[in-house]
Amino acid sequence: MCVAALFFVASLRAQEEERKDAEGCKDSPLITRFPGSIINSCDNKEYDQADLPWKDGGTKHVEGEYHYWDIATRPGTSEIQVYRNFQTAIKNAGFTIDYTMSPDQIVAHKGSTWVFIDSRGDYYYQTIVTEKEMKQEVTADTSSLSDDINKSGHVAVYGIRFETGKAAILPDSESVLGEIVKLLQQNPDLKLRVEGHTDNQGNAAANQSLSEKRAQAVVAWLTAHGVEAGRLTAKGLGQTKPVEDNSTEDGRAKNRRVELVKQ
Image (tube, rainbow, N blue to C red; front, side, top):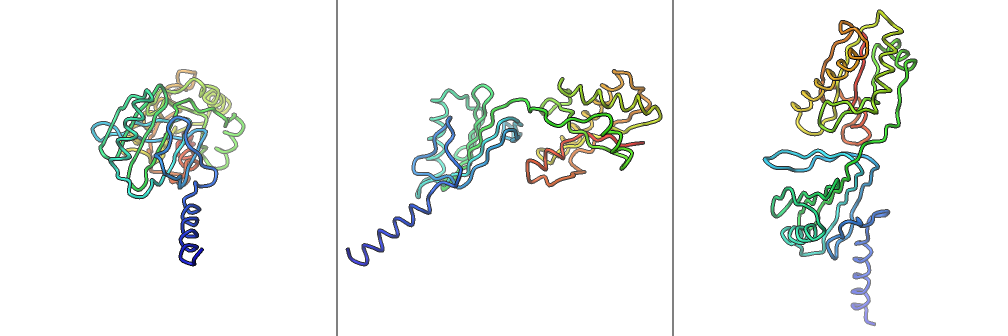
């Protein structure tokens, strides 16, 4: 074989090696990739959130089992080509298409599973979220709450959960709220400001309003369970007081919190 031919074969092999999927990444069982594509990167979380583009310039907030792919298409692929292929495939799979922005974006759902395709021609992003309730794994007891308040004058409480995008307290929060009631019963002179905090996802004004309503909901629950209303105040701080980096899910999770502040 001549030198030129050897060089050509070596070049093809190098291109094939360069177009390997990122380590640990594989296709979704729900939707196959665009033919000839490779996975640049992926992200899989037991529980995360996504804000999907929605009607009238809004967003659809979903939380649950989360999967994300950054996928490079084969050379010469156009945005509309990727868009039309996924539009047909998603329909044929029984999904309802809820939002489109041709030739870039498709949002669809089937049951509790949401799919978001964001096409750029040479590459596209694919997000799949299956909505579910988060398993509560962090708890707070009266002793730890009391210790933190005595040390620093405030404590972050992560076991109080709300309906997505709302101020309705979920039932599995009651054990943690009960510990706050005990804290106040054991410290009759203690007065608390209940603060609501959010991450920076979505609209800042909406986050501010939501944090206020959630703080008020916690105060309402505590007073309904025997705490004197005069010992509690509510304040929403929205996304203005992050305690961690909002660019990571772990950071955002810590920023979504209720804080108790000694008055």
